[in-house]
Length: 267
Image 1 (cartoon, helix red, strand yellow):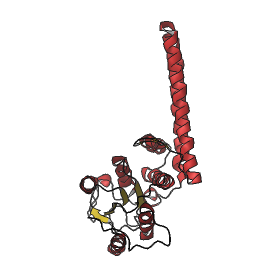
Image 2 (cartoon, helix red, strand yellow; image 1 turned 60 degrees about the horizontal axis):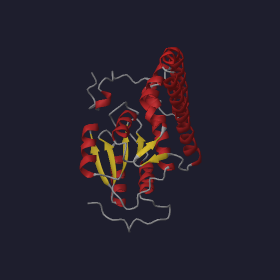
Image 3 (cartoon, one colour; image 1 turned 120 degrees about the horizontal axis):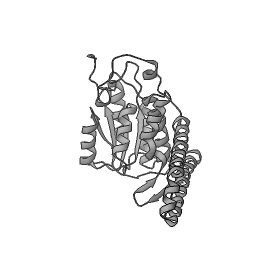
Image 4 (cartoon, helix red, strand yellow; image 1 turned 45 degrees about the horizontal axis):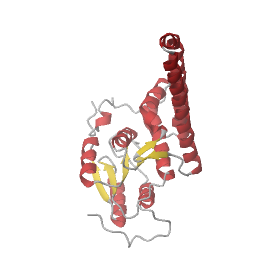
């Protein structure tokens, strides 16, 4: 049992070993996107195989129903790959190609749980695939122009962050009049989000906590900033605080030369 730190909910099963996979979790966006494409091919192939097996039986019962189901299958597969293409275009061009119907957004990230499991089957750690997903998610937030001028930006920090870095981020929050909280886990974070009703969130945490958090707040734009864990999880973690300031300025719709003295205080 690890006794030199307070493990978060996502690390309760950690055995205390500093493996290479636990240290080297950095990954590019191509990892998640590549496995997403692979997963989609598997899903499409599986659906086609099942249809091939059941089609004769359905044809014998009703040719019209069989025709409708075949159209639905082909349309579903086509829509899935279309969503993937628009996701790639948004990331590559930094322009919004994501289709939205009201608050519903058609993005390939809904496959994340399946892709994480698929990656583990191929020897890709949960944290490394999660790191890649967070970069994809951040890119989509930037591409879809979630700029929210003079609104409630919430910064959530982990309790394991080194004190000097915490102080730097608190200074940034005060400069831009952002809400800021240090939270020990997901349950308290969800409570704070419910109470404060932010319009945008910047989360600093490990990949596991960020993945859970992004899934929990689908209707609020989240930029995740994974921390580095040179001493293992939940102890003396570090992060580049400049990335937090960049995210704040993005959500506030501020350019490089914009001043901060016009910002309204957050109540």
